[in-house]
Amino acid sequence: MFTKDQIDISRLPSHVAIIMDGNGRWARQRGLLRTKGHEHAIRAVKDTVEAAAEIGVQYLTLYAFSTENWKRPKYEVTSLMRLLVKSIHRETKTLMDNNIRLKAIGDLKSLPTKSLQELQKAIDQTSGNNRMTLILALSYSARWEILEAAKKMAGMIAKGQMQADKISQDTFQSLLTTTGIPDPELLIRSSGEYRISNFLLWQIAYSELYFTPKLWPDFRKEDLYEALINYQNRERRFGMTSEQIN
Image (cartoon, rainbow, N blue to C red; front, side, top):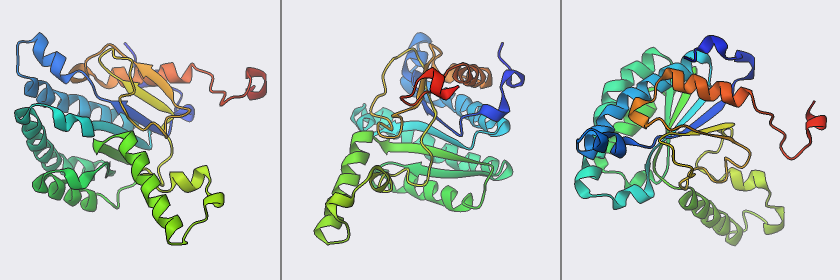
């Protein structure tokens, strides 16, 4: 069993991102509707957010709903949106009590009106909190994000607000939805799948990737601790040699 006492607090990643995968399979294994998997996943979210805040992670991004997820059966999408509204409404007080700020990235205008209103209300209410920032990726895809940034840049160049030969990585990054947020040092994916699934493609250029067979509804604090310990046992070189790092 992994405990937070085994983690070196001085070497924590400041930003952890998680692809929460496996809700449908968890439900199917139990003969339940897929929607029941999403409902049981709430416990995993609460456990992970609580553990990350307790240990000192500054930013936690959860991939909650991708642009591709709109293609799922209508009943499942409707259920997910209702669950989103219910969960945000219920957990806003918990975020306030734990000094956690809520943010969201993605094509938020595509969300149902009630979902977007509840989300924005919670974002506004928690905006002054500073213990940890919880970022929900909703109706998000990295290709969408990069394309939107490219469109903004093209528009600025056309208006004379930017010169093409002055564009840098920092310039481009400032136009992404994650502007002002450090890139994730650690990306976790549950359920045993080894894919990135169109998530934060620009931002995870140098992230450490961690894959666990645990289905997301079963993910608990100890699973986060295990991922953090695994991360701390790696050597991050950023293109340099071990000798240069050491």
